[in-house]
Length: 312
Ligand SMILES: Cc1cc2nc3c(=O)[nH]c(=O)nc-3n(C[C@H](O)[C@H](O)[C@H](O)COP(=O)(O)OP(=O)(O)OC[C@H]3O[C@@H](n4cnc5c(N)ncnc54)[C@H](O)[C@@H]3O)c2cc1C
Image (cartoon, rainbow, N blue to C red; front, side, top):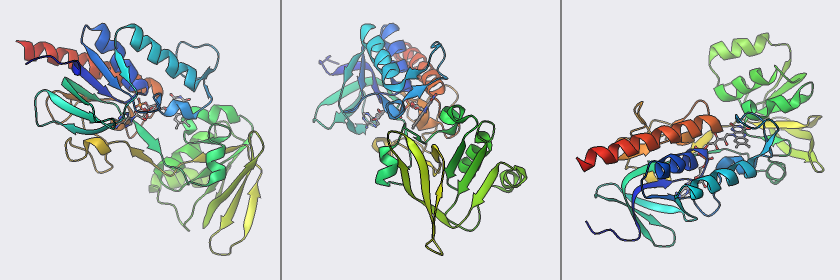
């Protein structure tokens, strides 16, 4: 096959910790590597201010700075990073073909899907304004900052209940606001919730407005049945209404589970030979930067091994 400028041994789609780690390992492993990172590369960590649980940084790290470091590291090691969105992939041809929003076609012997996930938000303008300033989509990440404070969790499924229980380790009180009159979470979790004296359940209610100045000061909630509102004096609003894996470009081309996460085996291999997947796009459980980075490493190592195998 003739090599064109847009032909790479490994093409990575996605620019979060999984994608950049995969790029670091792929380029360092000697593969001609392209990373298609979308128009705003950096992933979900751009939505947060301080990260305290990424190993190697003694002091809190600004999310955007951590991602900038990963981008620079990947480039220094030889990965070519393009700020383009992949809009379609053809996995029925060899090499694989990836078309971007600019109409360019990149071809690849191996492909790594690392397009991440998006926390669902309520969509309220006041919520959007305070993301990273008191509004969070990640209790594991930000719970620690609310030691001794009151927080509220919006949601009623398993994740929301797990988040509320987790937050009681730090917060003095956790309001749990749920739009229905009973929870959707499993019975075991509901039992734990009921027994926890720090949690106050608020049923039939939704988040109506997040209030504050430069940071969150309170959350106004509204009872859907009575129309009455109540202001919760809380500096932390945790939105726990689910995640959407960003699998659109792979829809119908790679096997996914019922919640649209890409299915891989324990060697990061997706359902088409030569395609690997990493990060939140395969992870309904942990959703942490270090886990995403680790799985990006795994995917790249497997992709390099695959390139060796097809050479034989
Ligand atoms: C508010 C918030 C705070 C968080 N805080 C922490 C924390 O403190 N510690 C921690 O460990 N984790 C934290 N997390 C979780 C962490 O950000 C994620 O687990 C991690 O970013 C997942 O990495 P990823 O590489 O799988 O995907 P993502 O970070 O989601 O990155 C995927 C990237 O791929 C791009 N992309 C998607 N589709 C395409 C396409 N078709 N073409 C090109 N590019 C595409 C996206 O635009 C995005 O930039 C937080 C998450 C949120 C939302």
